[in-house]
Image (tube, rainbow, N blue to C red):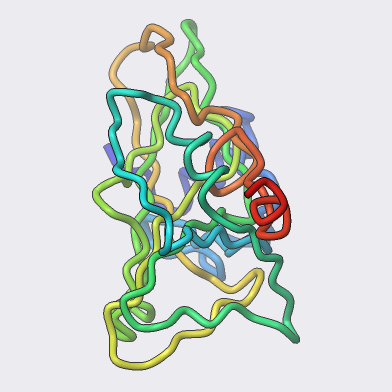
Length: 202
């Protein structure tokens, strides 16, 4: 069952789950829609290098380490937004951090992150088939973003970038491994190396 804006606020006040950094007053006001809450963009964008002769093989695991080695991390500001070019792919995090604890004696929750219609009309994709925020998750949400449009798109910190749809879970799930749980950077748990560090290692 999808939670309404009223139920999301009630669950937050009851401590059923957390959205750290969320700023709101009433469920009928921004950043809420009737059945979702808008989240904002963080201030870091991870840009994969395009000139690395690497074949992606998930059988080797640790995708976070791979992106850390083959990408650069850029800090964006209001004065210096990131210019997302046509057909460019980047990783970014939400400003807010979410936590959906596993609570055997209470209702558990999970969520889905989806794009916003305003960005869709600009032909900006927010996630690649990875919308699920599982029960037991904590940390910011990574966004796999791509500009499918003909024009460049500016990414500013704390711009409303996606919406979170919260759902009830039947029963309490057993905890399961997740390599990105508790991540702090868009690439995953490992902090991406800078372009300067990469250059110095050649």
